[in-house]
Length: 358
Length: 158
Image (cartoon, rainbow over all chains, first blue to last red; front, side, top):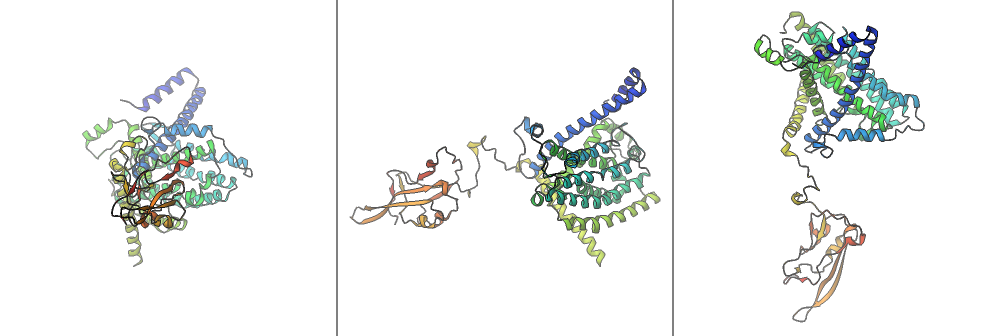
């Protein structure tokens, strides 16, 4: 049966056989870096195309269908175009920050890739505070956005960046609480432990209604955190032209664009890990035969399937709902999501203590 | 009381959002609903709306007759001087002098397709048709004479 674990173990064995341990470790690092960069590039191409196709279908259009079969190479062509383009830096921009900002945003995405379990025993870094690490690092992306907005020396950019800051700072709370409900149920911050705890059923089924509420809150909060419609106030085309990346062009713009999709992938991967069991196949309690059949589907397929389902959900939101106003956005967080998530956390704590979950 | 309002707010909000998602989800799962016309490929089978206004034409019947009386109502109705009616006098069979059109000049490049001339015409001599392939290399080709050469007014139209 196909498994990514087998490949990694054989590569590691081979490296340690041929080279001394330090050298082998360094080579492994290089391999991991290359793999994550290529994953980023591939995800950027796939997700942008997926978004355009989903958007078209929802809006009763056809979407890109000229470049390659069914428009498959549209995003490749777009990327080539962006590489060829001139990366313009405005005259009075803060050059250092302006050039640094897209890389900061990308870097955050790369850091977040570390603790995600892509398949069974296929994880870059299985730290015991995985969830904490994720929630801590994901808030760093606001620094990149603020840098971009400030350095552009443009009022649209600055307004977009400030909005983004306000938005990320407030929605982090309810995202954190939603994540905490699963931590309460599992009793561990380690992502591999969280996945293992879902061996006899995913948390969204095992955790009753509170887990479902937590999932809805999580999806809303991460949609806001990744600055996507209906919470895309940071770029709000109709008000701020393009928000914080108004002044960016060429490859720097492409990096922001890529970072947006990478962030979507990462939050969806985390959501899939927490609520849908990550790479864990669909197991139902003690149905041995059923569980055994499900195990035949490779764990990487399960993980990608769940993640792409969540990505589709977020895209569905984007092309259905109208954009919120700033005051509505903050109202939604502070008056609705936060109290509900606090109450939900209490409920989950009661359930976990009394052992009411399956 | 406050709590009741709060909960009903949340329930209303969620249910209305779900209603919207149901609609878009329906469109997503039903590709038959797609209305995109892949224009240059489907020129033969292009579907255009009845209401689409592309160009003013004057319909002529088999005997090369139209119904324009030369009343110049369209010319007066046109807000930007697109139509110019050149009239002449004809003598009918019983020797009476009668006004008729010599040429009805229509300048497509000035037309905004506002439909006011069509509304103003008392004898429905001109209509809007859904043509849209108007590109030409020479601007003078956009100035058109709507009545065909040798055409005359149909009997019984006053």
